[in-house]
Every structure is written in C-alpha cells, then in structure tokens.
Amino acid sequence: IYAGNQYKEPGYKASDEYDGELTDKVVVNNSLDINKSGSYEIVYTVEDSSGNKATVTRTIEVQDKPKTTNTSGVPVLMYHFFYDKNKESKNDGNWMEIHLFEEQMKYLSDNGYYQPTWQELIDYIDRKITLPEKSVIVTADDGNPSFFELAIPICQKYNIRCTSFIVSSWTHGDWIAQNYKNKGIDFQSHTYDMHKGGCPENHGGLFNCISHDAGVEDMTKSKNDLEQVNKVYVVAYPFGDLNENVKTITRDAGFSLGFTTQYGKVRPGMD
Image (cartoon, rainbow, N blue to C red; front, side, top):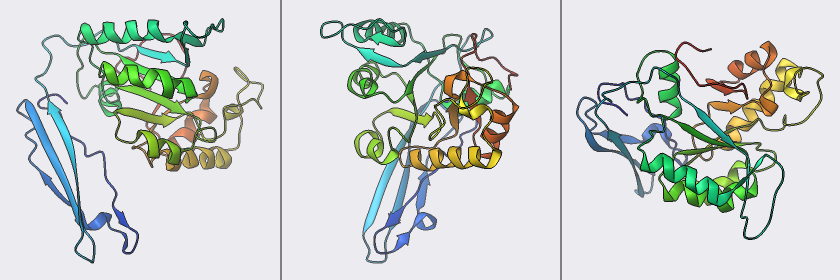
C-alpha cells in the first residue's frame, strides 16, 4: 500500500476443533505506520481453553507514493487456458502458450509494473487514491487445470499477483485451500454454477435472467466456498454478460467489483 493511504484490515478467522469459533479471542498486534515507507508485520495470536496458542503474521509493504500517477486507466489482462507447445498444440484462441505467457509476465516484472490489490482498484475507481502509471491486473478465468499446473508457477516465479476467477461448482474451495492457500494467488468468483446458457439476452448466459433469489443464493454459495481460501468480493461475469438483473444480484450478494469482457481500461468514476 502507498504511504498516506488508509489500511483496511482484510479480516481473519480462528476456530478450534474442541472450542469451536475463536475469532473474537484473537489478539492483534499492529505496528503499522501508514505514513512511513517500510516493511511491517501484523501479528494475530489466539489461545484455546487448553492453553494452546496459534500465531499468524501478515506482512504489509508501505511504499512511497509514485511520482507519476495513473491518468490513462488500468488494463486488465484476461487469460483462460494454457498449454506447452513442446507437448501439444491448440488452435482455440482461449489457449495461451505457456512460454509466451512467461515472456509477458517477465516483461511486467522487468519493467516495474505494479499490480494493485482489489481494494486499491476499488479505491482508485472511487477516486480515493492514485495508482502508478504502470499498473496492470492479471487474471485467468474458469480455474482450468492448466492454470494450476502451468501458469501459477510462472506467476510465483516473477512475483506477479495473479487472480483466478473460479466456477466453484467445477473446482471447490476446499481443494484450492488444501493446495494453494497463502501461496500468493488470489481466488475470486466466476459464480458457483451460472457459467452456462439459459437466457436469450447478450451471450445467452443464465445469469442474465435468473431469479433474484436464485442468483443471490448462487453467488453467496460461491463466496462462502472460496472464502476458505481468501476474502471474496470480486466477480467475473460468465461470458462477460451484464444487465441490471446481474448488477442487482451481485450487489445484494455482497460483491463490490465485477468484470465484463467490454474492451477498455478501468478508469476512475466507473460503476
């Protein structure tokens, strides 16, 4: 985060097999100085009724504000599936050759591109903060196995903040939590089970005309499933479809940010 910007606690949970919910017993030791650049630790400690303690540390990097601020908008890169040209070939435009993907991630790393957090992007849209001119968001839709097998190691190698938008009826949050929690990859919603047809509007996605209650139930189920991994408040709309029904359901399910496939950058003042 940038010096002078507000720090918003992402949240934490604690539980014990015997005592049950322990979140209200967590003690937070916060030494963060938001006005001074540097590396800070926030330490979360909890103790159960038997005296057993658990401690987790969150590292916060405070950076000086950029000398040049972003006035042209933030691009969002959207990938889907990945393959290795040395082992197979793909003609579908949704497939990205993994060596080319690595070249692109290396370029972003070598040239100092900043990857905002989702909260930073929201605050940028709301004109609460500025971002560096060289900012970019990296995402991949669907949670295809090739993302886990091929793309994640590249994101980790170049320290790129990559987000996977998961259809959680296809790839459940418990499996992701077991294998990828706290591994530097962010997992957000691509709905629970609405990545399919069923409505005539736009690209024909079900989300367009599903009932309000059924839509909120689906999105809430997606949120709860993936929050085994990290905080979930962003959605990529299936097929990029968006109408008023979709927006209302998304807001009522507790989401703060949604992505279409409309061409163009994210700019301050957008909905």
